[in-house]
Image (cartoon, rainbow, N blue to C red; front, side, top):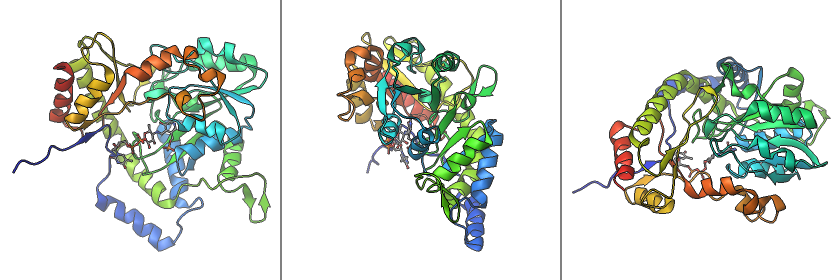
Length: 372
Ligand code: T4K
């Protein structure tokens, strides 16, 4: 009897040996501290600061609550300029805070927020910019900061994809802007099952964030803000500490897979492999290709062909956020305002990339694309 082919998904979480996690669990069972900033939570915050080369980190239950809280930490109100080409959580974090998203088109090369288009979208209500380092490719951080300084705007980076990415000067990309937000979701380069974090430059801001993720409590009897419960549990934090031991090896494997795709697909007519600009250390979080008009199939036909062959690639990020019902009525959501993002959303496919993807599986993906 023929076995059904093994499905290949866009990603697969990297997990350590189960046995290696048991001692961490034993420690939790012994000390009975399950959450509320316990020892593993504190250790992971420090370990991540050291690994990433950033000043302060506050851990969260997920990236979305971290985004919502980052906006509150900086008291952002009114209008925020953001990208339509992202996962919907980016804009949802604005709506959760009663803030109006103002969509600005993306840059043709990186598909990140186009700095040249930002100024025209600024109004007296604008208080911040929320760009995304999409696919872990750095935004034009210098240009964005210049605009923010000129107009006295905050910058909060949605860095959900950007774990471990370094910028031109060998500096973590997370050190730009006022705050950066990470996701440690199962599908991310570094995962704690669910999880997220806010990276911040100073102790005072970290303290405010820590209060906000714990209902606003500063001590047993004092509540200073309408905080939420966003704390990462000890199980997730312990798991993160173990995951960190394997992260360099995981990133190295991703790099090899990325290079092999580029070698196999780089010369295929009508297939454009997206590449980051300005990173000295990439994390190969995604492998997005654009299926252009001179390829024999359109994007959806190629996507279907891959699915028919049990390769479940994803169209990140289609539809655009601005096309979802809660956003499409906004003036800035008009497709005529966002032509580059619209074109990318109609052409993109993210191919499978994760450390356990083997060479035969990758060859199969490539030959399906090359062979039309
Ligand atoms: N900002 C940005 C720019 C983001 O991309 C995200 C999340 C956020 C903010 C919010 O961060 P979090 O609140 O999530 O921490 C996934 C993820 O759920 C989401 O975290 C991620 N971005 C987004 C880009 O992708 P889906 O709906 O595509 O995931 P799903 O469940 O279809 O997973 C994709 C594939 O991964 C599956 O086909 C199989 C594989 N998989 C998935 C999971 C969950 C596994 O093998 N194991 C698993 O446990 O959204």
